[in-house]
Length: 389
Image 1 (cartoon, rainbow, N blue to C red):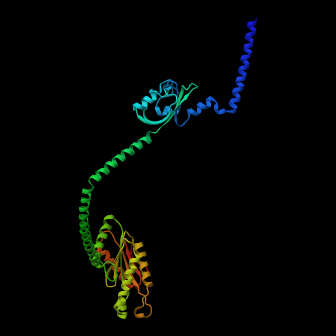
Image 2: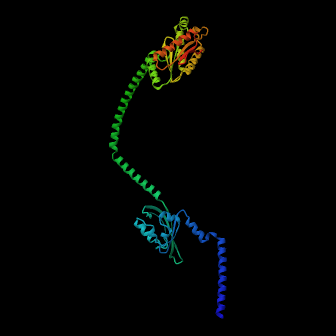
Image 3: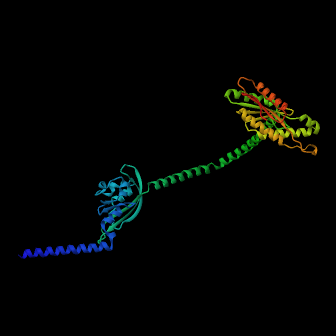
């Protein structure tokens, strides 16, 4: 009977103690929620640095994800394994330190060393070690925190290699500086002489080229008007004519003559006539495209070749020139203003005809413009002949 009472009393006291324990635990967690073990492990598990906790014998009792990522060993492979079997190092002193990491109860250090990844690659780590002791100053556990510094270490080693290479180069330069300076001096002298020769040769070549270009320009350019001369017309016209036939492209010619030029010359003198011709040349250059070519055909006659141009467009160009010419004003001998006009014949290449025939048609059309009253454009295309104005 007494035994039953004792058991009931003990059971009641046990229940009461459990309730007090739960109450006390609740108060502690309420005042300090970060002390909860689950939260503490969660922080460690997701820390950016690798963390491993060892027991007093150096066996792994906890690792986080970063540790598993850096070493290549899973948590299952790491737990209960000695740290020196996971973090293998090719450095003997480091390997011995890791093996005896828990032997010194006051040990706290930081070291950088190479270790071997699970896949046998060598990586560099920066590790801090702290041993935690009990009241008797005996090592109870160890915490190791480290990070992978392989890239930084490789950069450092490469930098050291480059410095060594630079030092070797510097020594080599110093050893051969005297001879090198002598060779450079001789080379400078030779370069100077060579530069002078090259400079003189370039000057001679430039003068020759300028002379050739000037001679060529003089040989193909009419000096008064600045247009191409009749001699150059033959070369350009035949080339454009051949290209027109080969590529089946249109080609037009404008043949023009200043109206009553002889009378103007006789009235005001050749100097005034030259001014008219010079201004006609300027007007023609301003009125055509870069691909077109204008020539002084002779006296007061001019020819323009219009590649890849159909008759309608050629007529518009001719009319533009005619209008601009009629608007030009001259004051010969400081007299009353005088206007000069121009008659223009237009012809487009027709399949089967030769160059001379096309130019002859342009010439005939120009004379038709003269006959019909001057200061006008007359043209003939494949569709026939008709006056433009």
